[in-house]
Image: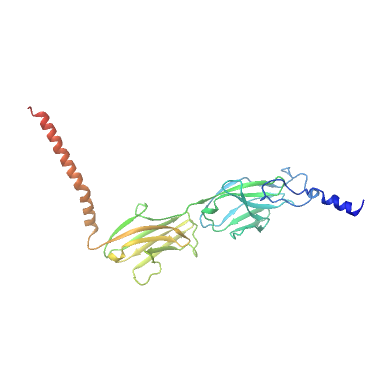
Amino acid sequence: MSSNATVKKVTGMKRIGGTDSPMLNYIFDTHNGHSKHQHYHDHRWGPHFEGKSTNITAQAGASVMLDCRISLLQDKTVSWVRRQENGETMSLLTVGQQTYTGDARYTVEFQYPDNWRLRIASVNSSDEGQYECQISTHPPKFIHVNLHINAPSVSIIDAEGGPLRDKYYEAESTIELVCVVRHMAMQMQYSVVQWLHGNRTLNYDTTRGGISVKTNLMEEGANSTLSIARVKPSDSGNYTCILATMTQQPATVHVHVLNGESLAELHHGKANSLIHPRIELSIGLVLALLGFFHGWLVPR
């Protein structure tokens, strides 16, 4: 046989490592059929997962590790992909220890001896969804990790812990507002709780004096207290609590500093405005009933 004939025969052969699968995101080995292990379908001898599909809940801002433990990987490749909401489209994230996405928050941190961990730094609500760890067998083997992100919340609360919308203070008293942050991983150097009066930041304000901001950071949130001493009517307005890392979700309360009127007078005025109509209604009802009974009892 001539050398040309040999070339024709080789180039005409079908590539053994190929696939007819429409899922182009699956990663397969390009080794020839001879190098493949004939027992890869056997759970005891071929690559297999040391675990099952799982659900993970994380706090916004935290770094998350998705585990993928594989035994007897042999010459196969491990890949991480993310399934989109429709469940059919997938985005390739990593192959082996190489990252194949432009988002630098995704990396593989291999944990000896068999854990191909996917690390996602500073997660947010857009990272919620289904992630898939794949082994490049044919057909591919895979397990899922469903990631849920707790929605962070920022609120200014009253003494009972309920949301506060309006607050009244007498002149020369002290404003004290409490802001609580929940379901948010707090980091000292990044997660700063800021207080604003209108558009003016109060945390480092030294011009007015008498302003104090005390913030206690916790693993999954923070408590921050704003105090302003000897307030005047000019201190009225909107006060906002906001996270430097989550500016799209502020909490705001409207503060009213009374001008010469006491809180007792304010509450008394409100009470009168509520009681008077009720009194008038009750008197009218009594008079109507007396008139009815008088007409019924007195003979014509």
